[in-house]
Length: 398
Image (cartoon, rainbow, N blue to C red; front, side, top):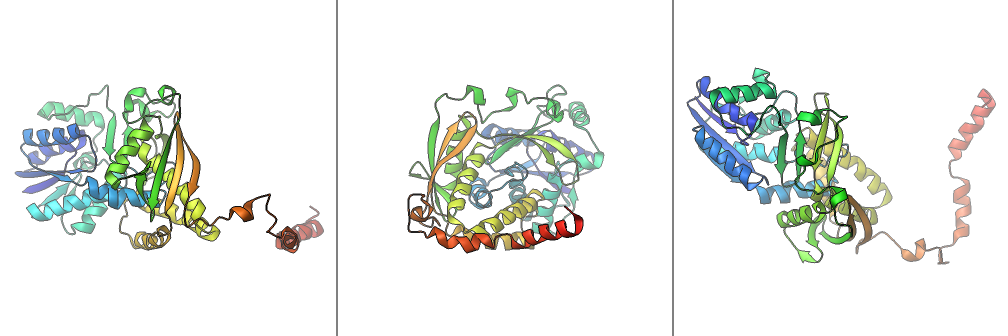
C-alpha cells in the first residue's frame, strides 16, 4: 500500500510514519508545504523523512500564501475573538498543495495527517483534501489511536523515531509567515502566565525600546504595498513588518479560544505583522467607507473570519463575501501612519484620495454648514422610542 503524509517534521506527523509501516504501508511519501516556517524546521522535516525512509517533497508556497491568503486576511480585518487567524488561513493552502503532490505522485491508498481529535485542524485539512482530492481515503492515526502527547513521545522513543519533544517541555508550536501559535504544557492552565521562553518574534514590552517608532503603511486597492515609502511585494512587506513591530513588543496575543468541537482552550500567538497591518487597514477603511457600508463590512468581516476559522475556504458564502470585499477594496487606497511603542500600536494619521471627509464641514470654526436646519431633524429623532416611553407610563405606571 502507498500513503502520502502531510508532514511538518514535528511529533504528531513523525510518529505517523512508523505507525503506517506497522499497518502494511510499504511506500510512504511525505510533503512539507513551506508557508514561512523557519529554514531549520524545513531541513529537519527533510532529514527526518529521510531517516524514516520516506520519499519527501517540499513545496515553496510562501509567495502564494502572502498574496492569496495573508492579503485577504488584511482586507477582511481578520479577527476571531482577538486572533488574526494565522494558523487557520494556512491550512487551506497546505491541503491544496498536498492534493497537487498526491495527483503528481499517486495514486495513493491514503492521505495522512497528524491532527488530533481535539483540535481545529482536522476539520480544515480534511475539508481541503476532500475539496481538491475527492474520493481518496484520509487517515488521522493520532486521532484513531486516541493518543495523548505523552503516549506519542513514549511510542516515538520505543520505535526510535526522531523527535525533539520531551515530557518536561512539550510546547506545541506552529509557525508560518502570518504568525506563531504556542500551546501545551504549562500554558494549558489559564491561571499561569506564559513564560518568556515561548516568544521568538517579539521582545517583551518592558524590554522594548524606550523611544517609540513611527511607520507609514501605503495601500493600493486594499493591498499593503509600501512601508515608509518603499514599495514591496506582499511577502517582503510582511517579513519587514514582523521585524518592525516585533522589536517593539507588538503582536503578543493570549486568549481563551472556542474551538469547533466546543472546547474552550487557552492559546498564545505572536502576530506582529498581522496586528500592525490590520490596524492600519481598519484605520484607512474608517476614513473611506460610507456609514452603512462600514457597519455592513463589520458583519461581513466577522462572518468571513468564522468561515476561515472553520476551514471553509471556498464555501459558497465565502465566495459571496469575497465578491463584496473585492468591490469595497477598490477604493481602499492611501496611507496610514502609526506609532509602535512597548507592545502598542497607535494610529497617528491617515489619508486617502477616496476619503469621505470634509474638513470644512467637520470643523467647529466653519460656518458654511447651516446648523439651524438641524432643529426639525433633531426634534423627530427617536419619535417611536418616545411614544413607547409614554405608553409605558400610561399603562404600566413606569
